[in-house]
Length: 456
Image 1: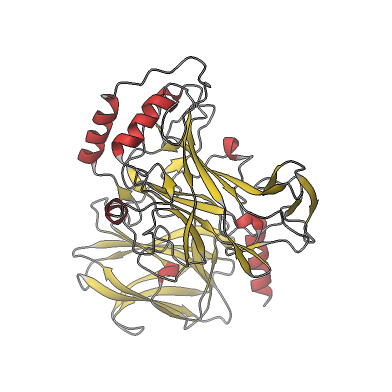
Image 2: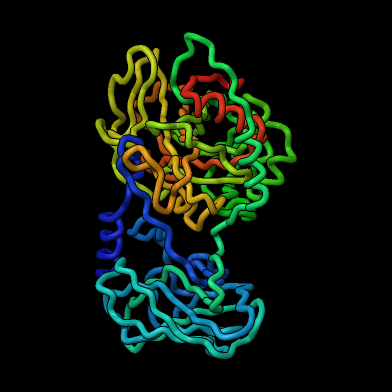
């Protein structure tokens, strides 16, 4: 039990609250330079014995499997090992180092040995290191893979973040969803050939357009984080495309013409964790999705590629948000905030005001991927007014402004993901290319404020 107390306090100390006010100064961790043809996230097991799942303390690490001791095991189904020699890697952490090993076996916990990783101390339960082992011969094609923990000492001795298998080809790890280069080139050519609309005199010179959305439906689904796994998520409130569920794809969004957003040509899916008051869902009475630019020169901004997706916020963040904290819910309207909830984490609004939150997404893109394993590493916030480095492409700065038909109360609220600090949002792009392109060209590139119709 001592080990677990230390471990969990380490996680809490390293927890990251992703917040709007700090967004301009945050640099997201650059994506790992994966060389593996196959990456298996440890928490994606099909079955296990003796394991627990928790969030890693490092940014972008996702989740790890913890509390592993002698005899514990994890089972992963349909791991395609292809053929030929492999380099196996394991990202592990250990404060004790065993002595012990993590064995990879096929078929069963006692099946043929694929590889064995010697575990030595890494300096802490969240100090991560990568161990490698060479595999010269192995069963080919999809396999049932077991990770089996062996230790001569009692107690927990290793945490595992992921395994990878490199066949030497330098393939892209699963979770990195590449763009269709031909389709993207065609979309860019269409965009660059557009003639900008004339901006009328008196137009507010702010690079911005929006989609105004109403609440559509709720499901415990997340087609970005948990695709094809209905019920695998906490409850989400969905806006936009009315077909959105665990099985949503780019094609399904484009094929379904029903949306709760204006304009109708925005078939994108937007979702947030459901808000609760005293166990009752409080659904938003309207969300405005702003598309704009925070760059000194917005002319470099290009539309999102079809099927692009990203996440803002941190569903795992569970830290207090008292008055004055960043990542705040706030009161909009006459009278504003008049008090705080009993736990101090939620505002109480005047009867003439209502609860609101604004969630800001990154505005720079790597130009190569529609998604990444953590759904964040393919994007970043601009630094010093520019996009560069691993994320050189300027994309519209997306912001959710979410309103709720409540002034709050002393009893406060909760989110389906937990505390107020866990507020987060998902964006899955399915705009009509021409409709999106004209708005970026007319409104953002010309620094002209447009409405939901894309006009001035």
